[in-house]
Length: 143
Picture 1 (cartoon, rainbow, N blue to C red):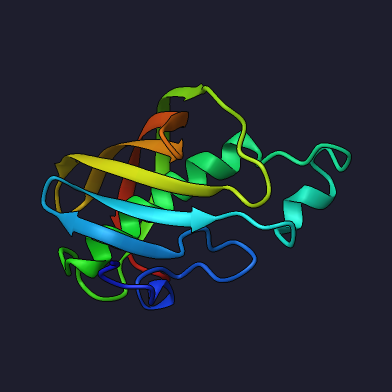
Picture 2: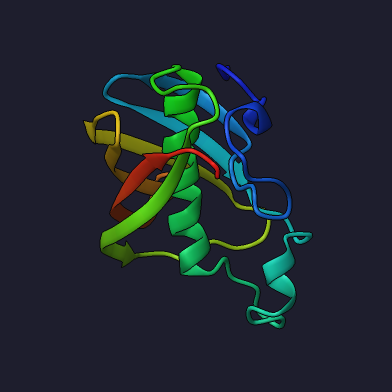
């Protein structure tokens, strides 16, 4: 059971660059979200067309979007706040993500303040860890 599938109300991202399907759970400690990658995702046409694999940077973006969407869902920041990725650390890619894979994104909030977010995330396909990372986002407004 998800808490919301209305991700477009939580993030400024739009298809083809929106990588969160639903938020399953969210609280002050972190969140769990999902994304199912499909053959229609734009990057598969050029990222090893004979053996399509989700690019690692897309997995990092997916984790960061999931973390930001969950914070927006909890109304921790003013409406219209934007999260700008500032640093990415401790990135490890452990298993490939392929078309048709449903990814479970587990986010831990390490620090949340009015101007900065630090989170860590893990992306799983089933019980297999596919990717993990830490990142920091600066909180701002458009314009």
